[in-house]
Length: 136
Image (cartoon, rainbow, N blue to C red; front, side, top):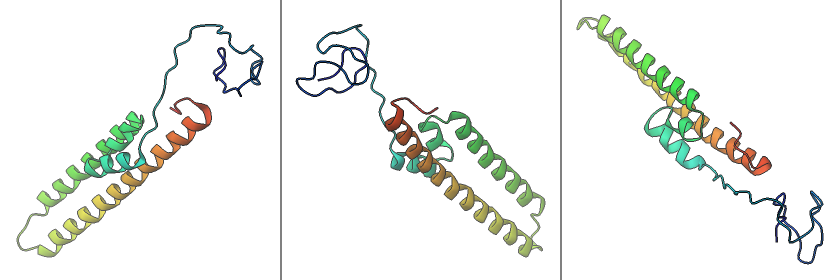
């Protein structure tokens, strides 16, 4: 049984709510109960793996997700410009070095992005369990 005023769970046979003091069986107001579902950390991580920033958007950090998408795009454009500038068949070493930097940089951003989305989903769920409200 649940309190009709605050929603606190009450034991069977309990006459008054421990939390608000409302008499059992009375309903003070007809409030709508909204259930907020938790976010899956696994889904957030997979979304971020498939497309940088999407996991952050999934957990509600839209600005952060868009910033990560922009960061990834800027990094890709900057590396592409560097690649075009140094595109000289005689400088194969420079070309290879830029490609290695591109791959390592992309992997660092990708790994951090997946970890961040996973961590945010867990923070969201912990806050939701503790307060009953969305954290952000």
